[in-house]
Length: 78
Figure 1: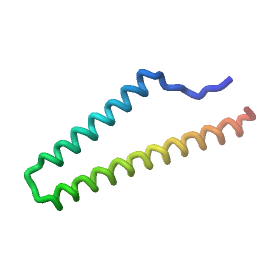
Figure 2 (figure 1 turned 45 degrees about the vertical axis):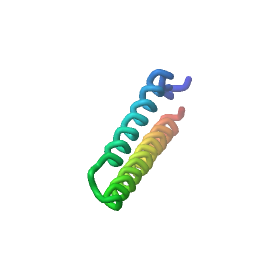
Figure 3 (figure 1 turned 90 degrees about the vertical axis):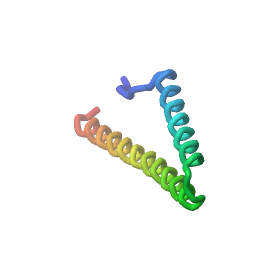
Figure 4 (figure 1 turned 135 degrees about the horizontal axis):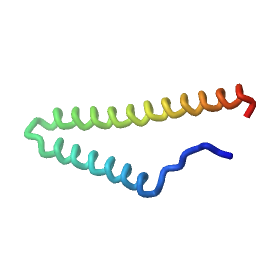
C-alpha cells in the first residue's frame, strides 16, 4: 500500500496558471517601469534568480521530507 499523495490535474493546472500569471505580471511591470534599461535588466535578473532559488529550495525540502519518510519506514520494518 502506497501512502504517496498525488495532486489532481486541477491543482496542477491552477499552480501552473498562477505561476504563469505572476511571471507575466512581473515581466509587464518591469517592462513598463519608468526607469533606465539597466535598472529594468537588474530587476529582471533578480526576479529570475528568486524564482530559481525558490524552485531549488522547494526541491531540497521535498527531498529531505522524502528521505525522512524512507528512514522512518525502514526503522519500523515496512
